[in-house]
Length: 115
Length: 114
Image (tube, rainbow over all chains, first blue to last red; front, top):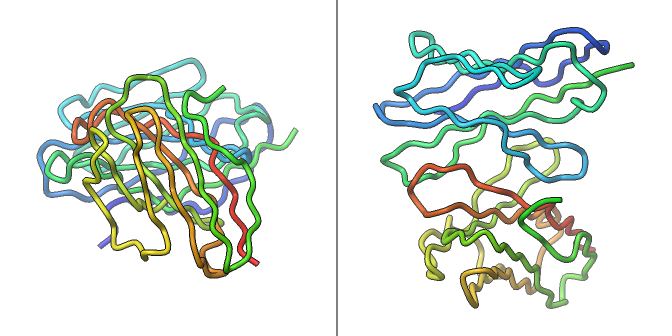
């Protein structure tokens, strides 16, 4: 069974629009960690955020915000006032304490921000 | 600039060649990883090194041979690869294996097998 599902394969928006990338996860572990990474065309995966299972507080960092809801097993990522530089593939990942930091990546969402 | 450096950035090789991919980090991380990423797919874990010892081998074919000469360096030796091995190879590092800290990735090596 897939542990991380990113149902949106590709999203296109126009610059300055807000966009939300969905991530749904599945785990039986009570201690786990969720991550978001950005992969621009250059190839490097850029770390954006880590959230542990005991901290449901939403987080905002500039134009980025994350909504963690254990009740729905979701960890969604919103970009406010999107910019062309936000164009990339975004991966959500799950790490379980019992599996020693092995990352389970979602299939990724490609975000196209058009000027 | 990324804190994990991978060389070369691009590599084209024939199926009979032997080549090596290199990865270097100077963040004092004790865990290092190799991932393979095919186009439009997420990265797939290949190997994990912890304190310079191989901890995880995700059933990778023996034509891929990892090596960790010291805590800062990670190599991936390639021999007799197949066309389906063409992919982006990513190196990553983290503080410790199993601490659930973020992994920091390099830019990757784009490998093409002729």
